Image (cartoon, rainbow, N blue to C red; front, side):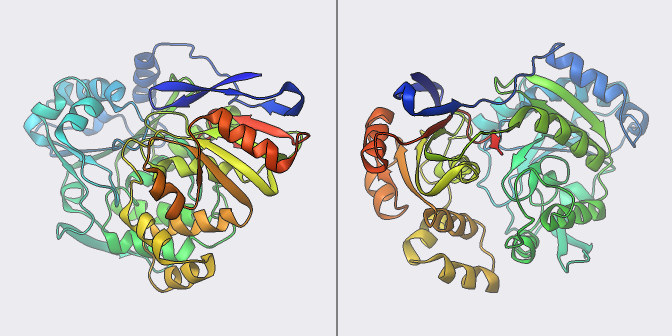
Length: 417
């Protein structure tokens, strides 16, 4: 059997003996029933739990638009013209609009990236900034019931009209991305992000595809309420990165509506667990770095047998993507050491290393990547192969010629259950 695996902006081919294959699982197909712009305009005209932008905006108001950075697949450029139309119709001038990239703890967005993400000429016409979570331009606005002191970017708090733009997709411990995630971690201070993780990360209900009872989701939602966003617009994309839904209004209502559509597409039932899982990180931008691409491994853990092998295809042109992730993998030998340190002080990136080591207790990792081979082998403890076929052949040699193989080409967005 031949299977194409997304790899950056291209594909790699995997050849697997038919008799070994359990299944090749993809997200359930949902086709767009309208143009992207039609979904967005309809959502903007029919918000849930809030007024329309055009009814809230008034001439002279300062407006902030919180948008995703380049590690997310959100097509902000599809949303921007329609949101800007409503703002301009209400008399808002471009010089009164600020764009905040919800980078959380990620690096700053570069100008060329901003141009691509925003589309049109918005990066040249509008003031924009990244979160820079360790800066001094944050204000304390309250404490959540779980003890998180919430410090939010001043540029957002000082706005008269606060708008969140994003997408809803599965997240491996926050349940789903979207909604409140634009606030926390998106535009919060490092100390707020750190405490949210420290308090909730190790809880067994902090897991993918789960909202109710998930303390990470609940704490983030509480923090976002303190920041008082006025409006949220989130889209949902199918496996082909086509917009198949858009929802607007109150950020939590938007998230839940989006999550229901995500579940319909991306939660996929599997008949049996596999000795070998062959997966890919959905290609660009999901496999921009190992930090992001790891999500495909994390979701594959649901369906690989103990002692199994996970083969990951991920280009990772930006390398590991997180210095703490790299450093913690270098510094600690066991997940127990990491958990002890993270419990004292949560380090974003260190948490990824903890998940990585915890996963290695269950399965071996094989990888095909453009990343530095020595780093992958020595630091990230992954077996590196020149081709997916080489990795498959070695996995079959180890697990036996009767080994059962499951293939997940879109591994960061498919939740096998």
